Image (tube, rainbow, N blue to C red; front, side, top):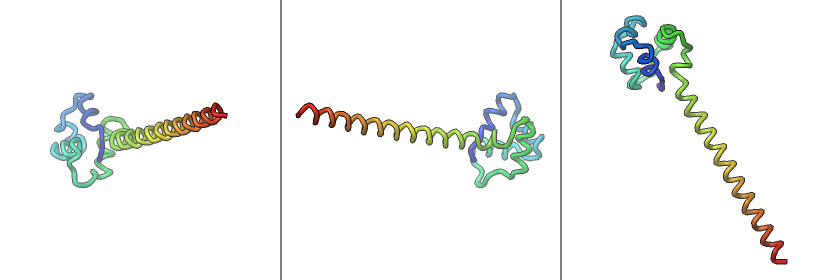
Amino acid sequence: MKNCLRNLRRSKDVTQEELAKACGTTRQTIHAIEREKLKTSPSYELMLSIANFFGKDVNEIFLQIMFDKYYINVIQSVILRRSAKRKLQSVKLTSQNSFCSQN
């Protein structure tokens, strides 16, 4: 699962061990979450415990990156569609101008 846990933890100057103890898990689990190496998503209880430790919502830590990537893709799609539409309009205008100048 995508997350920003490592950056958040480092910005607060908290070690993996400190976070693990505060959340009732192991340092290895925190490491695996940060490196996205867990075979499944962490339990909701653990995600909530981590979020509470930092005073954040679960979504802010564990889903933000996914939403960011989603919205980046949406924005890129919109830009590409608008660009293609402008090119098509430009071609139509050029074709009309060429037809008019031939008469």
